[in-house]
Image (cartoon, rainbow, N blue to C red; front, side, top):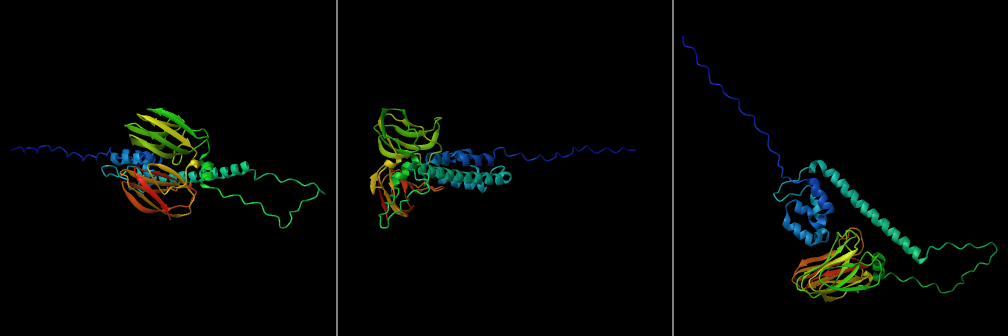
Length: 344
C-alpha cells in the first residue's frame, strides 16, 4: 500500500506594510507663526522652501506690508502649499485656534492704538492748560458780565501737517554727522521718527539700517544702493520697534542729517531720487510719473490703523493715477530717476 506524499508547507503571505509617513510635510503651526510675526522678513516662504519669493519678500519688507497680509490670509484659509505642492500638516486640528489668536492680536493692536491716541490727547490738553480748574467765586463778590458786542476771542488755528507730524513723532534739534566707511549714528532721544537726508561718494554698497536698543533691526532699511547717493528718507513710519541708532554701511565719505518729521517740506510737484514730504490736501487723485530703471514706490502715512498707504510700487518707468487719502499725512518717495506728483 502506497503512503500518500504530504503537500509541501506553504508559508503565510506577508501582511501588507503600513504606509510610511511623509516626514517632509511642513507644519501649519510653524508656517502660521512665521507668517504672523516674521512675515515681513519672508521667513514663512523660506520655511516652505520658496527661497526666490522669500528673498523678494525680504528685500521689499513684505511688499511694504501688503504681501505679509496676503500670505497670512492664505495660510489661515488652508491654501498654503510648500514648494512640492503639499498641504500643511496639522491645519484641520489648529485652524480654529489660529483664527482666534490672529483675531485677538488684531483687536489688541486696535485697543492699544486707541489707548495711546487717547493718552496723547490728554497730554496735549494738559500741555495747553485748557483743562484748568474752575475758579471759585466768594458769596457777595461782584461778578463781571461780558458786555454785548465785545469781539469774541480769535479761534485757534487748525493744526498743520507739520504740527501733526511733530506731535506724533516728536521734535528735536537738527543734527548732522559725517564719516567714512561703516559707522553708527545715535538717534535723538525721545523721538520715534524723523527724516534722514544722506549723501555718499563711494563706489560700493551704501546702506542705512535702523536698529533698536538690542541692536536688532526694526525692519527699516532706509537706503540700500550701490555707489554715490543723495536723497531723503523717513524712519519710524513702519517700524517694528523704537529705533535707537542707524547702522551705516559704506566704503566712501558720507554726510547724514537727521531732522524732525515736521521739518519735511510740502509735497513737491517734481523731483528726483528719494524724498519725504508733508501733505495737507483732502481726499484726491494723485497722478505720478517716473523715468527711472529700478523700483518706484510712493507711500502715504496718515496714522490710520490698518492703512497700508502703498500708492505705487512698480519697477522702471511708470505713469498712472491713484487715490490719495485726506491729510495730514507723510508722503515718501523711493526712486532712482526723475518723477512728478500732481494732486487733482
